[in-house]
Image (tube, rainbow, N blue to C red; front, side, top):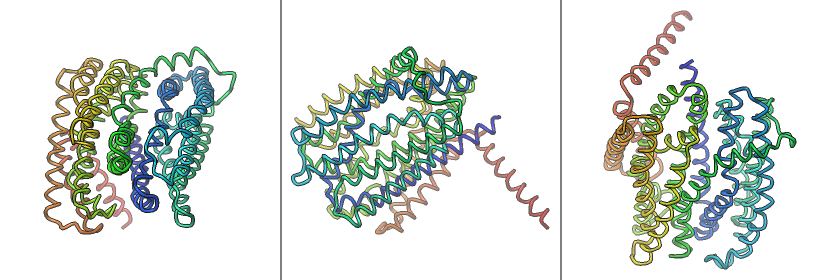
Length: 520
């Protein structure tokens, strides 16, 4: 049984990492091409448009954020009647939300150029893009509940396969549009809608196949179940508001306080941090189904899996963050063909500042899962909204009265978040799980030590190799990643985990040897 869980977890993690890699590779080639065609000032409105969509999603977040948890628990309790009530209530409430949000979405698009600085000559293109992004949002939230099937069956690999295909569809459409047609950012909106429709269709098909007992029937709408979802998830909404203030108002602030050019620069700088967050979230998501199932069946096993999740996150995170801290300046230089040393230095240091939560993030991501699994979101959410408000006020003051500019926008929120996590959320999680007060801080110490070693390794390879092209860059990255992985194997994993891995390798080698002998 334990081996089966570990195998499923490994499959889920690998599948999510492959999906992330495909998306990253596609963006790696497409982003410079799009920026070259439309300009970085215009491209900044793609990220800003997605941020506005995230603001709109707050209206439905309270219900949607807890849907998978409640439906999954009822499925594993074999209470399909209640599961179907949650299912139908979520879909119908999302349809109502979409109908309400149409009017404010139209007003935002119509008066966009009155709210912020928009590049002259691109207003209509950007407005159409935002219309398409809002339409995509409506499709997404109506169909999102169908993703519960892959969650409830612990088949994150199926979800990852669907995501990979949708990324490829989107990339083919964008390549064709920018190659054969005049360059407009609205193509991104069209490609996004088509890929979302494909994604939703495949999730609906999987739900019918894997969970035939779960189906949408209008008569299953239940106000009591909807109210339960809302009041459980309302703290997720509060937390998300704080998170938006902390991490997603930066583009809007840079546009208003500094200008469209600064916003364009920041949008490019944030690409790597955003992909890191996506990667970490994808790896963390692989643990969530099993944690939810263990919560319903065996809480002692849940704590064991939680600690295992932290060590795995430290193992992977330090590889990614160590390489980026050491080598991202070379990446920007090659990727965007930057020759201006000052511009390159700005992007590099602002990028480093924006990811310095890596010092504790390996521990925090599994903690956020625990809050959802235990349905204990109030403390976390209140702390996020308070720190968000403090960060916003402090950022505006620092930008107005100093010359720090983008450094202030990237750095102030980071400092506030780290103080909140260390002083509030970690002690609260320790109490919730009944752990010793220092256990999670010990993991943070392990994370910092492993990250320091990883950064040193990256800088050593960077000093050894002359990076003047993609081949030398990828060789340096590969050697850095392999070396960090080897050191993490020693530093991060426990003795039992190392012995288990060696045992599996030896078992595999012996099996292969027996097969070769039998063939002879």
